[in-house]
Image (cartoon, rainbow, N blue to C red):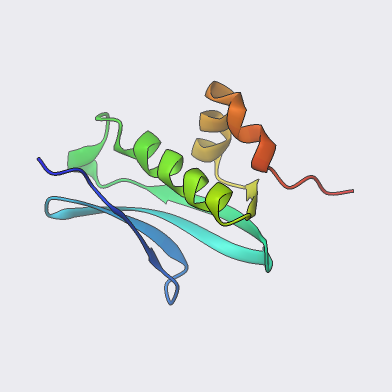
Length: 96
């Protein structure tokens, strides 16, 4: 299997990870220009339990970090991922 590559679909406001015939997605909303709310992760049933959700979240957080985008983890899966990998806390948006 080839290494999946992250794409961004700005029209649908989601990141997309193509895995063979399936697409795992992570939806986002632009809260401010450099602050994005990650709202929902969706992994197709045939891909569940294989680590693709975690791979997707890791790639999205890497994209945000590289592009100086702070994140608000509204999605429960993203929040639990950041708990497991606290090094990502550095890109969280802290509201005052």
